[in-house]
Length: 325
Image (cartoon, helix red, strand yellow):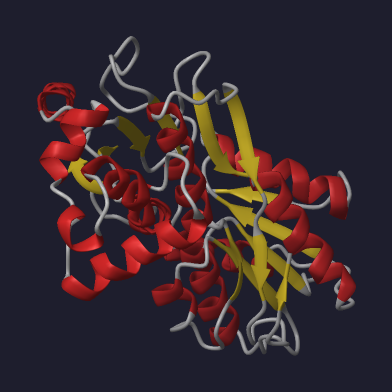
């Protein structure tokens, strides 16, 4: 490649790696020539020179992939242009398996590790403190003093509740998951901050069956029925919509329903399609990828918890078709 371009090997290396000082037209000429002849730098040699493997490990106990897959998509999207590959290891909830995968990542000399999971208030069952590579936590509880990213549950709950009020709903109810989940507690608190401290909150499990049972309880109690229901996840919301239909209540004419998660396979198949809060997990993954890359390159990243905003995806369960941030 250097011979064809008529420059030194070091000049080619600097041009293709985007570093070093040289004329802009020289850099562009070398890149264009490399593309024309299909030249690919030797990854092993590049790693030896830079003391990097250009790989990042992703650990998760979310074996179903509901939260991990969009996070991984964002990580890969952020790192692909930097020549960095991501490989995923599912550790379930097995500490021994977790240690095996961490040791394997270190043996492969990964540039960094991103830990993610299925709950923001639980850490993975493996000790990631004191590793010789940087660790970033995304949608899971991080070690003290770590770089941790998660969705802003309070922001998402406020978006949903304010939207119900904006479209004229006045008798609001929140049907959500167990009290021992931090996300359920935060969403319920934000709901009451907007709807009022006396607004009903019903805690149960994260399931369609609970959404159905909660509607049965509300209708059997008598008194005024809700005209707006904000649900703690999309599964609960789908159960709520089914139960309302069985009771002859029309969605959204009689009752508007909003879910949480924007699990598209669930939200799109609900009838009518479900308005829901999207936690922006792909963007969260993108930010985590850029942060672990910065740490691997020796740049400073301030530790602490970063909460990324959510967005409201409007579908037919409360009318409209646009998005609200």
